[in-house]
Image 1 (cartoon, helix red, strand yellow):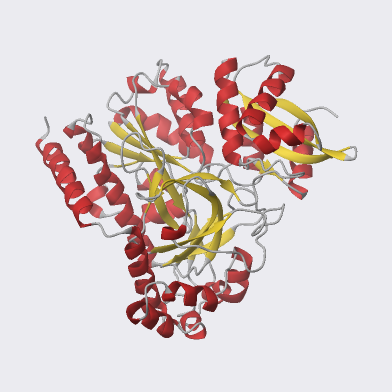
Image 2 (cartoon, rainbow, N blue to C red):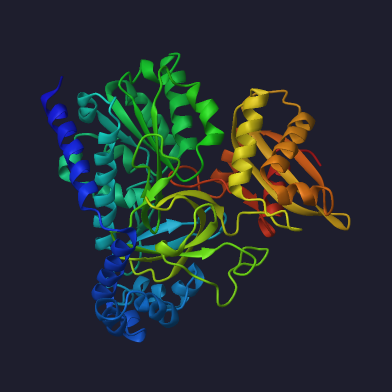
Length: 522
């Protein structure tokens, strides 16, 4: 038994005991977090316009709920376009003290999963430190996994990130994938454990990066893997093929933990587990370009615990027709709630105020609380990535579950899929594109089973299939079609994910691509 690993594991266990004893209520954590954010940003241009001094005084001296009511009345809700056009563009042009003190050196490039042009999200020093702090907490949470051997903590951490070779702006700031920005600044003590190392991490060409990792994979002793499921699976497949082995554990026998995020893991699970030689622990992570939002803190937890005391203040908008239209656009005067006002099982859109100078920022994700007392949530989709052409209210969560159930029933591996809502005569239809590993999958059988599962999972869908939703179409594609489309958009690898729902002009773009590349015929 390795001495260092044994001491580390005992330290992790002790840290968890102390943290659990000292924890304040989620409401108190959030109140304190907002106070810190307001105090830090009160002398910025944004803070002076919206009178952060008064807001801070209300938190410190007024009655319990007064501060949040004033915050809602004072500061407007922003989406990306609004906050960038009004505020963030000034920081990008080199101005100081706009939404957060000082100048902004880094910007995370993010397109979510559907935007054609990249968003540029500010990443401050405070946010970098907050993400590092939460990352360490996630490692500490492994103390709850009693069957992990002490020497595991001395193994390598493979983190499949975007390039650390960032793009310079004229004003001196740098832009790139958030994971690439964070890898540039990993603590010195962690560098001996970090793989693939700085040289490979700087590689911008995703295909070359996977090749370089594959060539040296046998030299590493990996215990932990971190990344988006699709790209980790692709890497494992390359390594297995290159070394002509049966599974990844023949190369990395000590691999025991996969921390994944970005998308639901369930559609990938069946294909992923075919690449393993022994069971693994899966830990769900919610790390967005705007910050480290939540992570799974204990074995068997259904959800991820929101990080309520580290640089992010959360608000929740009930995801209902009262607050959002059929395209997922937020309506005026939408209702917002603090964490103590939410209910389990209801769907909410998420607002963030952060130590990167995001204020009441609509991130675009939707979620549900599965354990309100613990602050545990599951991601259900995106405000723009659901289908409700005629009242079917089909969420990405519904889609993921249906695909998982059908793939298990049919014995097929589905890595990627997307669905388009289209007009069908005077009514409507759903047009599915499903990526599979196997050949000769019967699209008609897949369609019937998928349609039936969706009707079981969603009562509104079942009703509309008898009325306005007249048809469901399914096109079976190789998974490569999805990866080729991502590559054509310059979004292969890193934190990029394929959109689960195509809307408006992207539908035509996707179909034209499939025709041009020969994946479908006219």
